[in-house]
Image 1 (tube, rainbow, N blue to C red):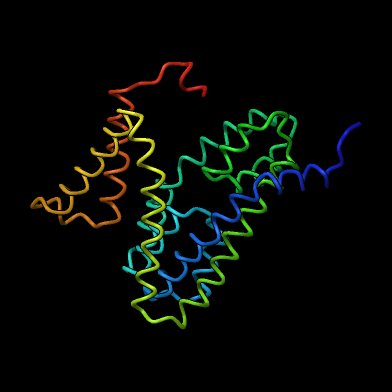
Image 2 (cartoon, rainbow, N blue to C red):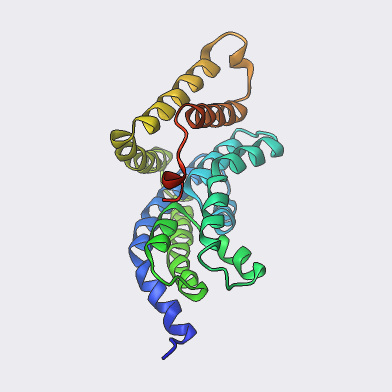
Length: 237
């Protein structure tokens, strides 16, 4: 018997519940830090509702606080989030029966953690993925709303302290990967080296910080792809 759409949706929702619970405190910390940096609370909420990515939001919000040009903000967020294009393309191959419009809509719910769970699911359907991404999205936006409102009343010192939670999350994601992968370690260290060079070397330090981030990220990734190419079997994983 074929499962109903609602059952598939709620099965996906329950499947993604742990991500929802994990996203809420991280987005809360992001919102508190962003409001504490000077962004209006409603702008912070709007960022989370339309951008649904911690790294991209953090980068974009920091550039907004620094009054960077709109094209610098756009280019930086695009580079930081470009991996989601590849993830969406990969997932679309498992849902070939869906029309393009629905694939484009579902692609807005792709994050690293959601992609990981979706790729593990046998018989992935559009309604299941909709439920899988709906919970984390609600957790992310809900945590942002609470954090934005709290950030408007919390002292600046506490708001700044909570902002470190995002960096802790980044470390928790990166460190396990570089411990088991020499190419990942190389790319990470190369990005750090490029960032330091762009920040302190005469001449290079004149490059705006937003473009320095783009150069370091793209340069390190390109060098890693050139030195450590993946064969067909690895790339399909």
